[in-house]
Length: 64
Image (tube, rainbow, N blue to C red; front, side, top):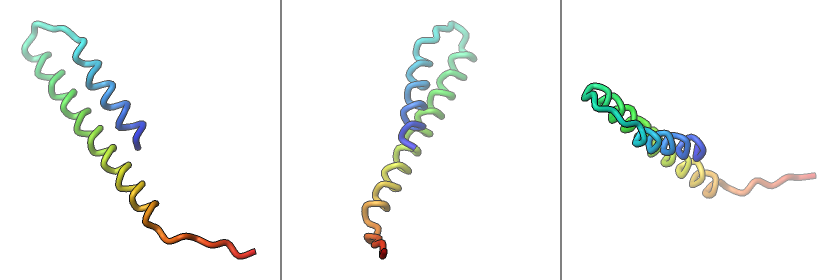
């Protein structure tokens, strides 16, 4: 999940490098960038939640 978060964030920042004078194209870039950052935040939160659940789980013992 953390890799997904990092990838989305990197792609969102890469969109900053696109230069266009067309207002419609600028709007699309902003919308896609916003969506990628939202997905990045969501994936990061999910990753933290999963790690938190793993940490608080009871210890598992193996009987041999």
